Length: 116
Image 1: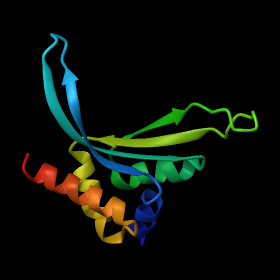
Image 2 (image 1 turned 180 degrees about the vertical axis):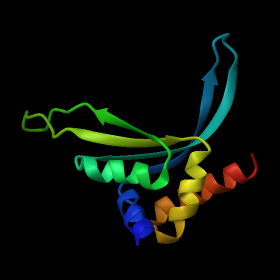
Image 3 (image 1 turned 30 degrees about the horizontal axis):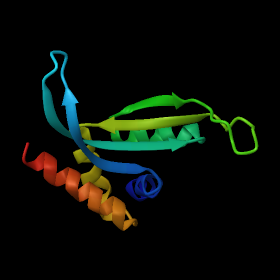
Image 4 (image 1 turned 120 degrees about the vertical axis):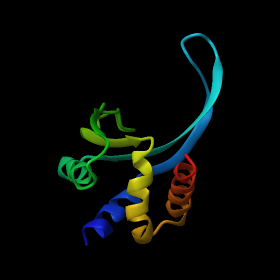
């Protein structure tokens, strides 16, 4: 039940295998790919629960934004995981995800880190 709940929350978040060209401190360019999971919510308890459940990632406060009517949005917390830890999270939640887009991204992340 816990993994189903976590997968339901993560279906509304961002799960991606990111890649691009980056420069190191000496100006040398290299290609880098990494898994990236990011979940934001105004429900702080949910974000802290996800981090506690998986035991990885960091929680950051997000800056309030100005809404279309000129008010500040509610404060949010963001749970973010980068790198190898995304593969273990994806392996756990993949069977419970409902969104096809996120399933495909989880499969890409798992496959990428199998060969590393």
